[in-house]
View 1 (cartoon, rainbow, N blue to C red):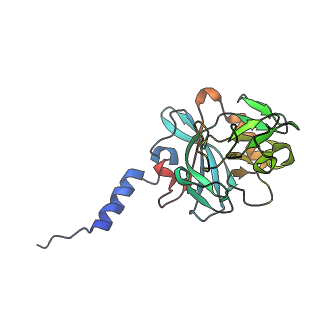
View 2: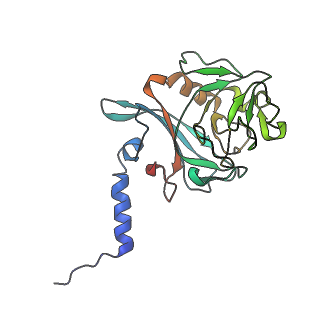
View 3: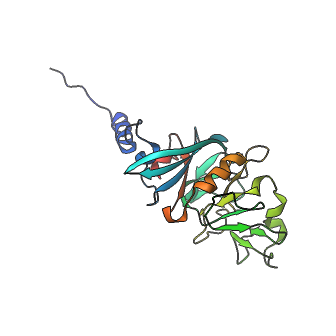
Length: 232
């Protein structure tokens, strides 16, 4: 009897499939890491060139990930790219698994929200100047070494920054040139400059749902390929 030969590409495909787990399992259960908490937000796009996708928020209950809500999402106009090699100014959304340091907004926090929340004022800026000491940080007021042309005056984005969450991309130990000011925020008129955005009602529901004690994280990725969300 002749033995069937399994080619190397097929073996790699099988290995990738096994690593991701059966597709009928909840998405967080198929991921390499979820951050160690009991809440998770996933932002998944069909492919790296996509500017649209879906955000879903999940809760770990009795050892099983359960969907708590979902909404359509927008990504960067440049698509998605591996977060570890992203370059500033490319309008790409960085893939990876990130903490969510705090929430913020021009409007007050929604009813029921307990996540740390910072109100935007006329003095609030996000510094994106690679030469500034406060690179990739909220500054209030804007320091002299952070040029206005290289910073976001947060209050001018009244729709997008009505409410949002700071994403911990390039945040703990910022790498100059990697990118700054990545948020999960309310939709604007189209694709973002690298953030993830959702409708205003969905942003309110996420903020009312997120609990700091449950250590929520945000996973960003694609359905397949090198930046697939199950890698993170």
